[in-house]
Image 1 (cartoon, rainbow, N blue to C red):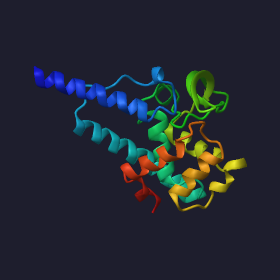
Image 2: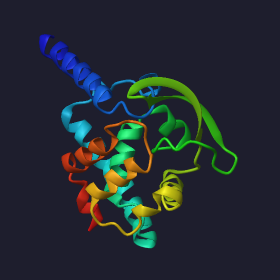
Image 3: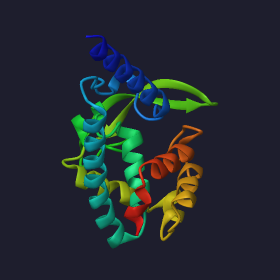
Length: 193
């Protein structure tokens, strides 16, 4: 019994740390409940499946358009959607926290934004996509115009992450650092080859 209780406590502590470390996207209340029953091996398998699924689609889009490196797309999906478990990801197939509407479809959600380096929660409208594949395509289209056009044809993920933040993709002052860390931690650069 003590071993099970210890595992549950460790799972809760890990989940809490994960929310604190990746808390640049949606407000904590919109995250899926922690999976305290999931073993480390099960969690790693789930994460591996998520990376592979997003990575395959991101690679296909990149091969056609040469805009956003697959490693960047995967890292953003991990950070913004809590591995696809956030309310926005599960209800709207929106892995990237893209605001607005897609073909007239939108959803009102809480989101955390940074103003003057202070984190604040607001409500805003986000795009609702019919599938994850379309979300990835739209994400690439979104990042191919305006201030994001400088991302096109870059082959260095660190440079692309820095430009993404400089162009204003996220208000989190540590966004580029979080992207680069996710890419390194999960060997996501292999999808850029």
